[in-house]
Image 1 (cartoon, rainbow over the protein chains, first blue to last red):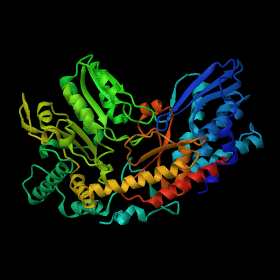
Image 2: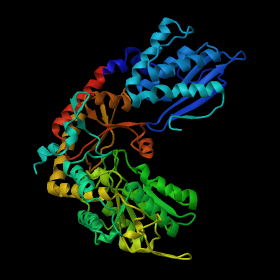
Image 3: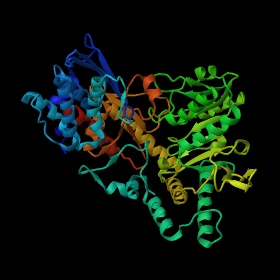
Image 4: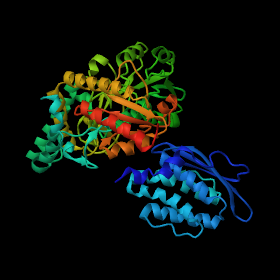
Length: 154
Length: 406
């Protein structure tokens, strides 16, 4: 195993300078996520319009480089997508983390695919998978508008 | 036994982690096992296995004798008055639950107070919380200062006429603070308040003398004392064990069972219901022999030297921040690195074969007080060496490289 597979430059950069951090204006969907094993927490804010497009997405929280980068990249990729497309991206992300499958969606450009695939190194570190996936599970909860707290251990 | 060669007694150190020799710095979590303990588990199952207690046959008589020999070894190890004051449990968590539950049933009413400290592990808080939920008890936390020491004057102020029990750790699993338990027991006993001591971290690292401490209850976790998992000890003064109701009900803890009436066994069986972890108890005797063979004075001296060496080296790394600086500190060192989360530190260190723990270490109250979400923790056992500390420090330097920190 090479640490650089896990800590790729994109991840370190997003971890240090997370994008879309803070509460976005006019958010109408939110959800909280919590990992009781390490205390990581995240809150996702979405502004979803009547046509079910995610116009704005942002987050607040604290955690390790993997979780901060994963959340930061996620917000960039979901912004401007419809609810259905966002869910497709989420599913592909989970498959990539679990089984290493490629991101095939046509709704991300090559640059965006490179970004999201920088997180694929996590699959070699089973103890760190939850760091990468917590915010994505939380995003599902926010998209569904159920306002239910996501807990990695429940 | 030469303490410098002690690693050779622990087969785990033959193993390579990510191609590197194992540098095990997670003994506060659980200690590695000497070969004598592993062999004893093996030989007991191969040649001597039987349940203890009731059976008449030879194997059972032998197993019972071996089981009871460990009880006497534990009694001597902590200098208890009687072997009847030594109760085997599943773990130290169960030991504390036993006291909280039985003492609570009998002595806690709505509005009564339980005094803990901000240093406590969740296992010395959650069992008391049940009494808050079920009985309306009030839990107070005695404050610590920035160094991680309990402020005794503040502690005293929190004792009221309503205080029914005090439960304190002997050694913090985060800051390494060695708590002045004897002083606290003196204060408490002047007001007739019993004291439970969580001895999970102290038992492997400092000399325990329950007669000298005069505490009412003392909880020990055997797997931290180089022993098997699934085993804990509760020491309690005999008067408490006689006075308090039983905890878990079942076989082995009864005297006579009728359709309308049950009487309970004498001590210590009253508190040991069901089949106990027999092999583990028998093997734990080898852990105590191992500790005695090294000698507590030698062990303390070795770990003190190691801790001082590590503190000095870590303080010289300018991007490492040590958490807490107690007056009397054992070999537990928690730290943070600005710009690198403890989980990332732990992953990077693991690549170099260095096993540490990262997170809140089951002490969320303490982390909140110290104003950190999580810390990285290196904790020592008898097998650690200065070379381990050197490798730890190199691995910490590597964190900065991986994260490209200036």
